[in-house]
Length: 232
Image (cartoon, rainbow, N blue to C red; front, side):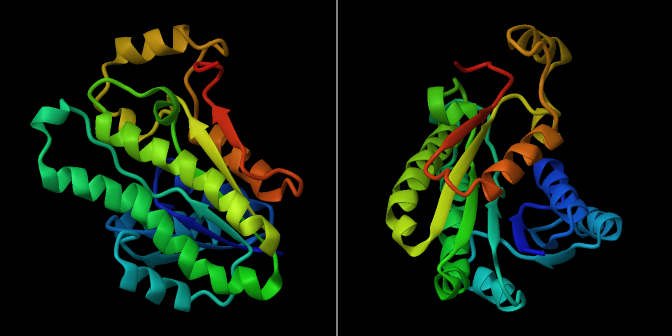
């Protein structure tokens, strides 16, 4: 049994990851920020332990990890998005998306590091996006943060490899979560048609990729597209 910490675990991809890792017998803790009702539902369904925490808050992350006796696998899934022209985006919104999507990884990796270094082992999986690879109009801030996640993953894989710690990344495509709630159905249908796999993805598609990377002992510094072939 391994101890798995998943950020953003109350909904969407994070909730699917909690379900998958718990089902295979791991001891799972998940961080969430606001939705207590959703977090409780995930906890009741999976037996995982929820911890309320804003990953952008360094002190809150340290406090959260102090409640976790050990860490073998860290899944940095917490993320937010913003849609609109960059010229119309408030500075506070720009700062917040970087704080959650990038600084959140910094905070969580640093909080997990003592456990990893003590054992000289550990696995980190970050979450980027296909837009972190190719960019998306009207999602400049989101694309920029997800590009940063890819570079951070590769840098950490080189930095932490000698300490026995692997760092990999998943780059999801169109995944049917709350982030797609405001996307017109015809646009989602068009994107599914443009995907070689012929459909949009599910949260469990991404969770399975996370589980593979978490366990793949000779894979590090890799960015795994989970987009049905949308970006090739």
